[in-house]
Image (cartoon, rainbow, N blue to C red):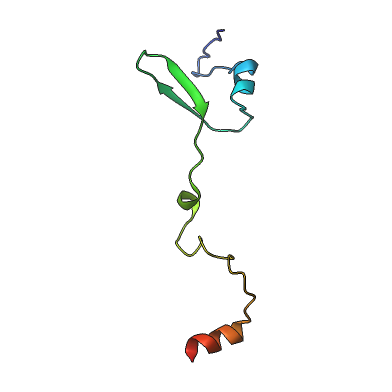
Length: 79
């Protein structure tokens, strides 16, 4: 299967390849070159949840399973 490189360096990924890799419009893809010099295309790895978090508090925000009232919690922490 072949395709033509445009003057902007773009190619169209054939539908059978897009279907096999479950690629959809707007998805990121990664390219690599293996030891044999062949180009390998695969969906970009999604960053882990930790990489997406901006700070350590974001990891636990909203995860409490006890519905504390602010006044009750402040009383508990201050006493």
